[in-house]
Image (cartoon, rainbow, N blue to C red; front, top):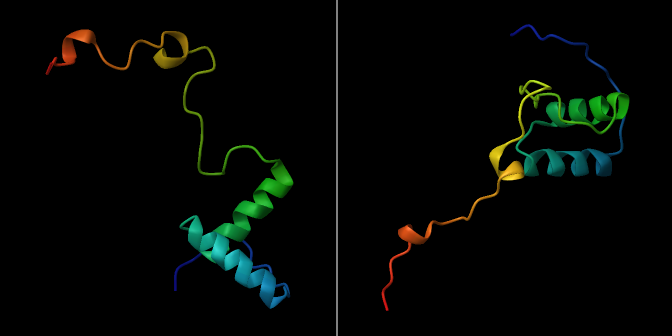
Length: 83
C-alpha cells in the first residue's frame, strides 16, 4: 500500500450526491477523491486557479504577443491563389 500525504476524512453523503460527484469527476478526468479535494480547496481558498495550475510567468514579464500585437492569422504570401 502506498503512503498518502493527507488525512482521511470520513463523512456520510447521500447516494445522489455521490453519484453526481462521480459523474462530474469522470467528465473532468479525475478520481472521486481528486474531485472532492478540488471542491474543498476552492471552498477554502476561493474560486481561483486549480491547485495544480500555476502561473509560472514572472509578474513583471511582458504580455504575450497575441494580447499586445495580434497580427494577421495568415500572411498574404502564404495564401495560394487558385483562381
